Length: 84
View 1 (cartoon, rainbow, N blue to C red):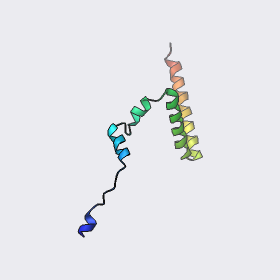
View 2 (cartoon, rainbow, N blue to C red):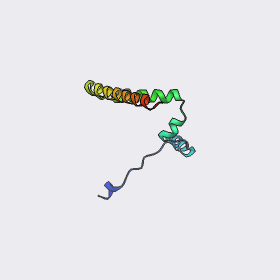
View 3 (cartoon, one colour):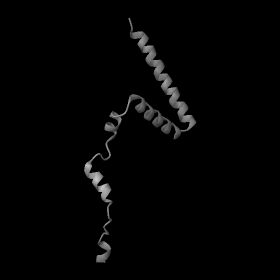
C-alpha cells in the first residue's frame, strides 16, 4: 500500500526546462491579438464565424439572417428620422 502512494518521477527534457526558464510561454488572447495586423485579426474572426455557423442548422442560420436584416432595417429607418 505504501508503494502505490508513491509517484514515479518523470524525467524532464533539459532543453525544454531551459527554454521554460527563459520565459515567453503561452500568452493570453489579448496579447496575442495585439501582435496581429488588422487583416490577420479579420481572418481569425471570419474563421470563427464560419466554425460557429457550421454547428448550426440551415433553419437556425436563416432565422439569424432574418433577425440581422430586420435590425439593420430598423436602424436605417431611425437614422433617417433623426437627421434634420
